[in-house]
Image (cartoon, rainbow, N blue to C red; front, side, top):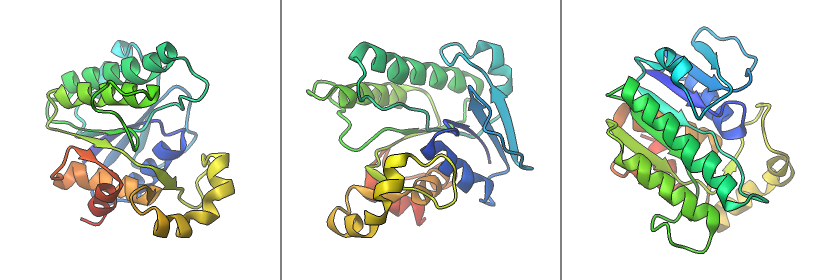
Length: 218
């Protein structure tokens, strides 16, 4: 399988990339970034492009892939809804629409978040925007689309893009896993679940944390 990953310079994307490079089912990985990830690997190629709102200049490089693991995203903290909408809904849907035109049989996996609002009408701004984004992606003519809704993601040891908050509180993971099993998984489980959804399929289009953990074991 040949896959595209966005967001590899962030924590989730880097973790998914790590699993893909070490997985026997993945033959080739293209990372689509604004800035270089700075890594060399026999499976890996990188396309640099600074405008994700217009992928037409690099569209030819995005053909003949089997899956996209979309891990690009920003925190809504301190952002106005208009700005968050642009970098979440508008950017994501443009990338997804470009890729489906280039790869008719592709599987598309999107990292959303626990408590995303599918009704698009709730009070929480980020949840509404994520819900609208999910709904748009689910309507696109992909072979399959999977919305991942993780809560706390325990980072993979040794990776460089772990957020400071996760470094500080990561030691609490074993306790949180016992107390909040519906909201806690590992970054390795996220990556493996994406690969398994793309290669084997899954019974649900929207994966909550327990689905992610289950899909990782398939």
